[in-house]
Image (tube, rainbow, N blue to C red; front, side, top):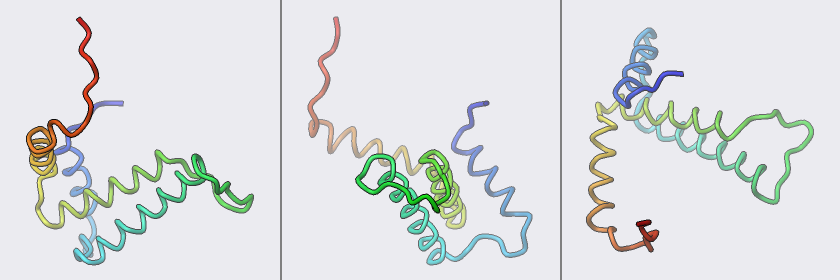
Length: 111
């Protein structure tokens, strides 16, 4: 499997959605889809790591599959609003590296 940049992921999703007349959903509908996918991820995490085992009638899904669904919808949401996810990521990392730089206990460096 080849490595893809965030821009490549965004373009791949945009190319896919671009083939359809309907295009991207509205921001509100996209948020609802994002919430739905997050709920499905939470359900799977609860099945694997929580106290709620799956029913025999429930289909087998993986956390990886649900994360993929969530990522797809997140990319759709960003694309629909012309948001560059790499830039958004960089802004968040800058915040963590400045404001929160001393919030957590760092691992000791090996010499």
